[in-house]
Figure 1 (cartoon, rainbow, N blue to C red):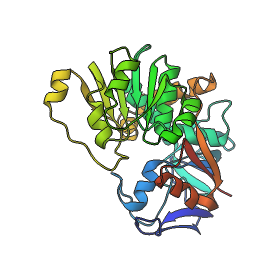
Figure 2 (figure 1 turned 90 degrees about the vertical axis):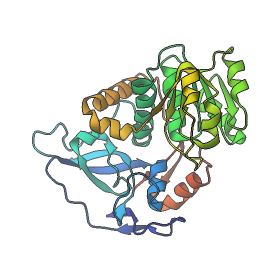
Figure 3 (figure 1 turned 30 degrees about the vertical axis):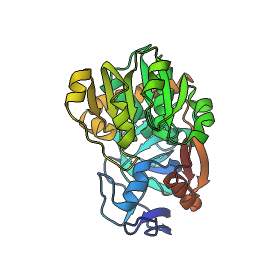
Figure 4 (figure 1 turned 135 degrees about the horizontal axis):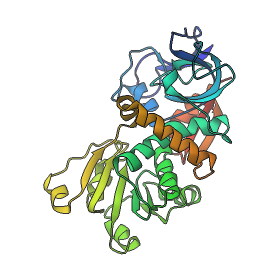
Length: 325
C-alpha cells in the first residue's frame, strides 16, 4: 500500500516520500481501517523536522488523524467491518490503511462526510479541551482566539460561538481577514500586530477577554497578557510564531489571571473517560449542525507536498485534507 513516510528528518521535506510499504499488521485490541480521508495538522509538519515534543523514531508514516471504514476488529469489539469511524494515533494516518487501538476511534457523527470528519477530530478536541475543560467557558464570555486562520484557531472560534461566547479572532495575515470572518463568524477579526489591546478593549466595552486561546506565542503572547480580564484564563496552545515567550510572574499576580497549558492528546490519555465525553459532546454539536470544520483544500495523497508547503508558508485558512488512492 502507499504511505507518506518520513525517512529522515529534514528542514525542507527532502526526507519525506510517498512510497509503497507493507500493509500494517493488526495487533490484538487494534482496529484496521481503510483510510478515506486524513487531515494535516501543524504537528505533522513539525515531526518531519524533529521539532515536535513527540519524536517518533525514523522511518515512520506521517499523519495524526483520519476518517475511514473499519476493515477488521477483534470479536466483541465496539467496531465491526463497514463502520464509519474517525480518530487516529500520533503517526500512521497518511496511508491507505491504518491500525490503531480501538480506544483511539469514535463513530463518525451523522451527516459528516469523510473529509469533514477527518478535519474535525484533533482541531475540535483541542479547542474543546482548552476552552471548556480547562478554561470553563460559559455563555456570554469574551474569547480572544489567535491564529484564527489555522484549523485549531477556526475550530476554537466555531466552538466558542456555538457555545454562546462572543469571539474576537486575530490573524497575522490581514489578507485572510475576510475569509476568516466568513468561516468563523466572530464579532470581529483584528490584526495580531503591535499593541492590539486597545482594539480588544474597545470591542468588549473595556472588559477585555475572559479567555485568550493562543496557538501562536511570541509577541502575540506578550501582548495577550495585557488583554486578559481580571480572573481570566490565558490558554497556551502552541508556538507557531517560533518563539516561546517568557513572562514575569508579577503580571498574572497583579492582573489576577491564570496561564493554562493545553495538551489535548495527553489530557485524553491521562483522563480517558473525559476524552470520550469530549468526543461525544463534539459529535452531538456536529450532528445538530452547530459546528462545521473549515477545509481549505482537499488533495489526493500524491499531492502531499502542496499541502505541507501551503502550511509552511502560512497560506491556509482551514485544514488540508488528503485522500489516499
